Length: 189
View 1 (cartoon, rainbow, N blue to C red):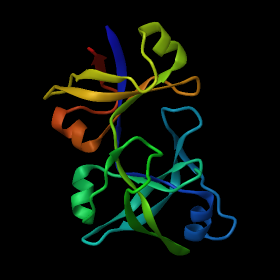
View 2 (view 1 turned 90 degrees about the horizontal axis):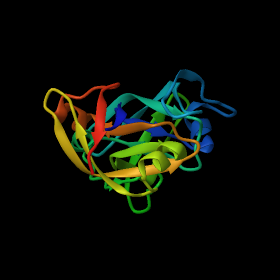
View 3 (view 1 turned 180 degrees about the vertical axis):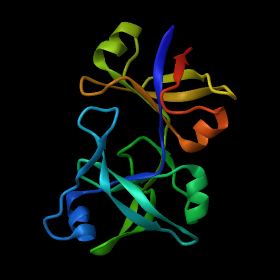
View 4 (view 1 turned 120 degrees about the vertical axis):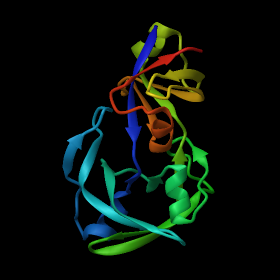
């Protein structure tokens, strides 16, 4: 059996260093609240408000460290609340995606693109992928074994020597299956 741990991603944002400073003040740096499953990644103490045409969310967690480009990841349900229609994409693929207003304690930033619904994916360390015969960008079928178990198709394999084995789904997908952080999912195809 090819079992992988499940990580449920709530709405969150990745900021560029320029946007960290625009939102939190000149010279501002993100500070670590807690480490995440992927090496070197962390939930920051800092949060922002995101504002769409119809609604907003306060206290949206920033994930660090700072990235090259700002990206907000939301569930489809979150998108309805905000009044936007972001595409389902892999992280980093933000060309032509939705925009949003971001507010911090020292300022605000409007991004014209950068809001996505993250495509479900599994991070594989290179050794795990090799052991199971899985290649980067391969589409997988995975069984979630929650209270209302589901089979998910088109789960993208992301392979790197910098990754730790972990499946990422959003809150809509987790709620549909009754799944939670730390559950196990089975790669079935």
